[in-house]
Length: 220
Image (cartoon, rainbow, N blue to C red; front, side):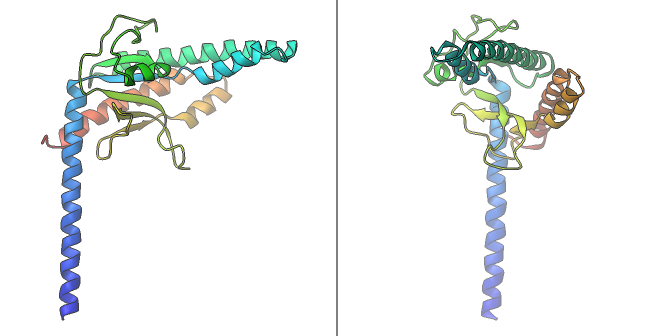
């Protein structure tokens, strides 16, 4: 009898703890949703800077053959054009279809400046040129374009919302919105240029999910 009572008490304590933990996470998500809405989301545009740097180094090496140098230069120009096209699509998609929070744009290689406390001089306008925009809100949030968990086989290529320390916001905050890269890859095999479509859809879905989540959770 005592063993049975002990088992019941342990179960009740575990359920209470789980309920309390869930309530805490809901409160945290509500606070983050409100802060994102009231402050700024900084979108880090992918630049392919590491690949471009490696190609530039290869082309500049004295031991690189003329043929390899030409290939490196051609690959550099192609990568640069692809990176700019992707960044332009992301910038336009958020500018036109995202209104949950104010948005600023920067290239990912400017992250160190943001981390060191700089708040202007590297944000971009619609032409991806450096503007005079100033980040004057705190806290601010980061949106990355990449894999949700590089070490996990179930990872997905997504828009990922993080705090200003680059830590992913925990569920139930809708921190990631998958980009349909399998469909995009299939279209590319068929010669279809559909990147804009899939990025735009992901931005629209992320915007809707943030509004829905804000409507579900109660503010602290």
